[in-house]
Length: 184
Image (cartoon, rainbow, N blue to C red; front, side, top):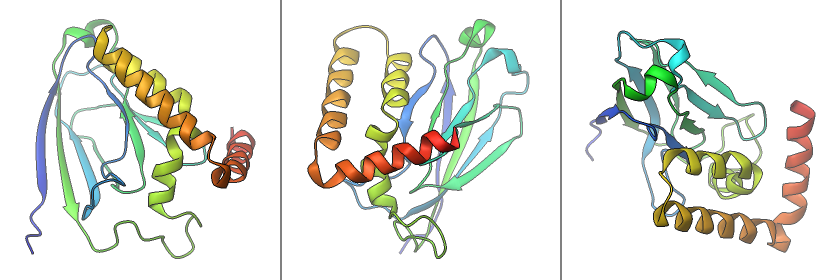
């Protein structure tokens, strides 16, 4: 099997130069992506310009990482919910460069020993309901007004409702929300 890294060079620019909440793997498509590595390449980027990487732990407070030149961020592809926040001020009209590499591995979707008791696929399934505000906000910020944004927001709300109305998940979601409130 090919174990070469997958690499993407990305230029972000403009009012909607951010990304929605996502994992780097999907529960709908099997993946061998184990590790995500982001390297920021914009030398003159200023903190006031926004564009931070926001990491949203399954349960816990979100953390933001400034896109400083030569900074690398490494995380597990199958269990790290993240998004990029919108640029502000001069950052809207300034190019933001990012190099992303993904490394394949053999432990995708396996629970870590001593780690969280919920499997990564179950975490990805529950995340839209558990972090519904962040999901909807990120979609709104990453797309201009129009039919596409309206349709995607409607689909996201429907997915959130499906998860919240699933009788088998109700108690689990309530318990996870209580844990989040305690942590915040």
